[in-house]
Amino acid sequence: MKSTSPISAFWLLAATLTLTTAIKLNITAIGTSNGKSTLECWQLDAPFEVSNAAGTKGSVTAQLGDVASASFLVVPADFDGGLHNAPANQWVMFTSGLAHITVSGGDSRGAYIEGGEFGLIFAADIVGLSEGHYTTYPGITETTGLQIPTRDGSVPAHQVVRSGPCQCNETEGLKALAAGP
Ligand SMILES: *[C@@H]1O[C@H](CO)[C@@H](O)[C@H](O)[C@H]1NC(C)=O
Ligand SMILES: *[C@@H]1O[C@H](CO)[C@@H](O)[C@H](O)[C@H]1NC(C)=O
Image (cartoon, rainbow, N blue to C red; front, side, top):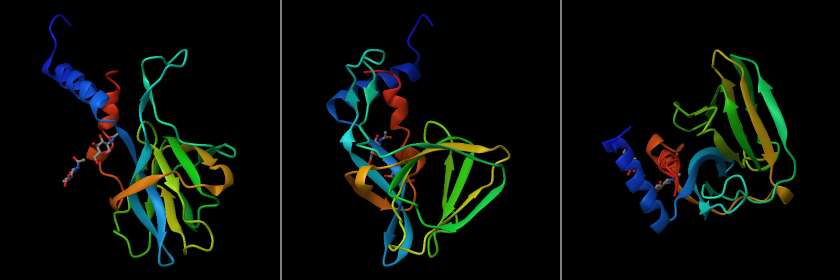
């Protein structure tokens, strides 16, 4: 506690760099290409910004845009959600448990999304665009989450970083933000 450990020094440095190079959120998304669903890593255009709001002043927030509604989802352990399309262009924020998403023609490892800090995805493979994706919930606990369709079906402005789900080293920038600005 008395001296700064190398680890906290690292996070302090990382947080300082944050201020000079805007950190953006990278999320795994379900897109479409030629009638097939795809797993992609998206970097959202809206950067993290230092919050001035009461209660979170001095921390950082990234805007996700306007949304239409929200519902809370509870899925039993070891559940097979089958092949389906996204019901709407929507955010899904998994808050606990584990989801496993695969797409036909894609890497068989697919995307494992753990509920929690790194649990945000965007699903954009709506009916008519593709044959859909396959989701199972292979965990030993229930999986919970929020499903949040965007207003007017909009898709958040983003860059496709590459195909396939985001890797750990593309999301752990959140840990640097956790050190505060
Ligand atoms: C993540 O790791 C891969 C290698 O596993 C590397 O090619 C890529 O550049 C890394 N990305 C970042 C943002 O560090
Ligand atoms: C998103 O990826 C970029 C590299 O492409 C990385 O610099 C940044 O820290 C990542 N953002 C988060 C929140 O992890």
